[in-house]
Image (cartoon, rainbow, N blue to C red; front, side, top):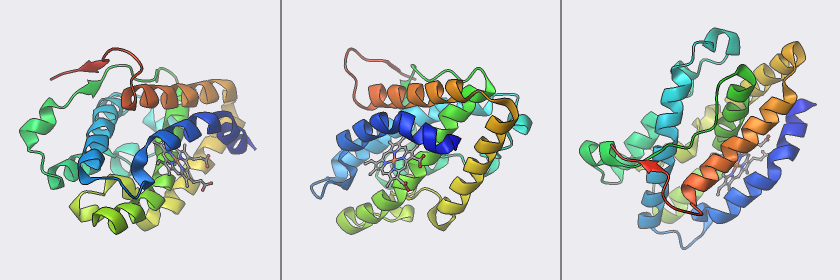
Length: 199
Ligand code: HEM
């Protein structure tokens, strides 16, 4: 089963991110949470703009634009946390995004950003308990798709499995998923210099 192989092939990178992000730490402050949301915004905003400009959505079979965009949730969280629209427009954006030049690469990238909604369920409960944040007051992004999360993950998994059965591309999907994890990691926890673009 390809999804299982994909999970195994990326689990090291998932674990590394999970360990570095203090989202489930009982000492998480509102300020450091705000910083984390700003960095996620700086990654997802340019990535989703690039994804949505791709011409092959009818072949991909995922209605990303209508159902799955996460940038609006990050924007509303940042506004709820006290950012102004002007400050939001000036936040640094990631310039080292994963390559999405083929359908397998798009699926590798989507696997990571759709899968992140699963951990979001756990994180959402923690943010409510420790910071008193609900989806309406600054925790919409980490609540994923709310009660729809499981159903949407199943639907995405079925589309991905069908694609692989039809056209292969397993190794490219795995490489792209790992590349996506690596670029998020580097953006959230830079090892050298700054890789941001400013607007
Ligand atoms: C503190 C941070 C995080 C926690 C606690 C967390 C936790 C989890 C949990 C509980 C699952 C569900 C596992 C299951 O149902 O089998 C999951 C799945 C997943 N998470 Fe995370 N996660 C975190 C951060 C992230 C981030 C930042 C990303 C990527 C941007 C990510 C990507 C994924 C993916 C791709 C899956 C799906 C794995 C699969 O079933 O194939 N996670 N995570």
